[in-house]
Length: 52
Image (cartoon, rainbow, N blue to C red; front, side):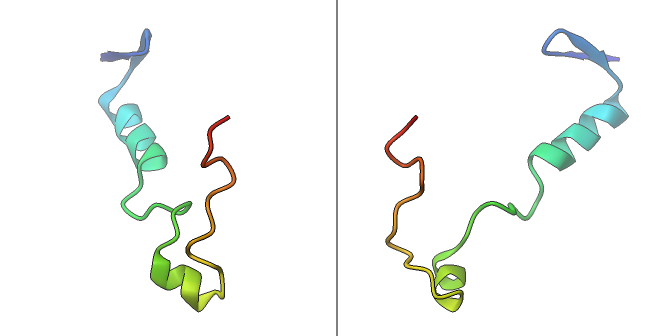
């Protein structure tokens, strides 16, 4: 058993959290090539680029 953020979790559960929170392929990041293919302006800043 491991403690993560004050919560006791099994190694199996921790591995599932890692897979969910940090997948090998990041679904929310768009490469310049993808942006161009999808006819998005790759120079356009993110919605929150200036901060909250």
